[in-house]
Length: 381
Image (spheres, rainbow, N blue to C red):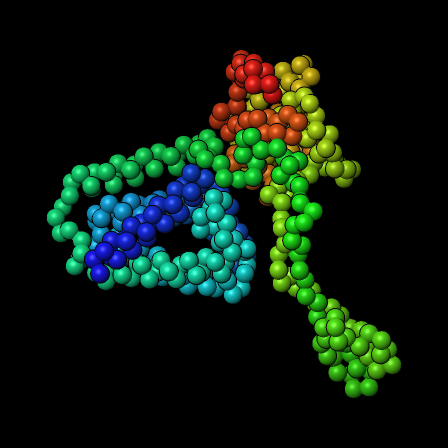
């Protein structure tokens, strides 16, 4: 039993570490997931707590995992592990039954699981947590181990720094489809032999003689018997989701509703995307540096455009207020949040390939960008 206890402890700890780490290096990603939950459950008033809750969850998971792996503070952390696993097992069971969101976000964007897959995963590790808790006094060392304890505390402090860095800059590891090096058109491609969505239709017909409304499938519907039955309605349900391209719902739309994304995705020149999911919340601390960079791009035949989901009147007011020398277009808000974890942020592409991305705290100066251009020329990009 001792060997199994140690195996359960280490595996449980590694899962907690991985779950906490992938959330912690992308704090805004977890905040968006909490916001999704609050919205679907009618708890919009809690959305302002989404970011701190996401950071707290990732830090707690990581700390529990480190303590479990190093077998220190085990009495306390085993209790926390059981409490968290019991809560999330119940929660994911509810999510699997109701499916308000398709991905629970337990592993951020690093590993996407369905709600049922997450529930069954939680069942296994809930059992591990119970084993670790039940035999914690029998199998762990009762001695205080200062070296292990210091390693746990030091690792947690390093992780706290990584969270802070990822919040004030960009995630140190990008798990999303818009990471540097990705070609956007290729990411939008759906293979010809890819599985398609499968839908199930339930048809409702009204009996003209009795007034009864009865449901039918497509195979047994009385659509030919117009004497006795009258079509009432149809209910369509997705029973099996097909292949979805990593990049989808990407568009660059003009005020007239024209999608002009191909003009920029297939351009052999460099193109800057100024990205803001919501201009009302956009940070303006480096707006002058942004303006200078945009003017430099215009003077050197480099495309520079803005992408936002804000209303046209807000866009016009923002451009006028900050005297920005570029045009802004409409894009999907979820897509913009996925493209870059910064409001605003910058992305540089060429021939549809993402070359670099910048948080608003890291907008490059003209001198820095010129050095980067020389680097791209050496690489042949």
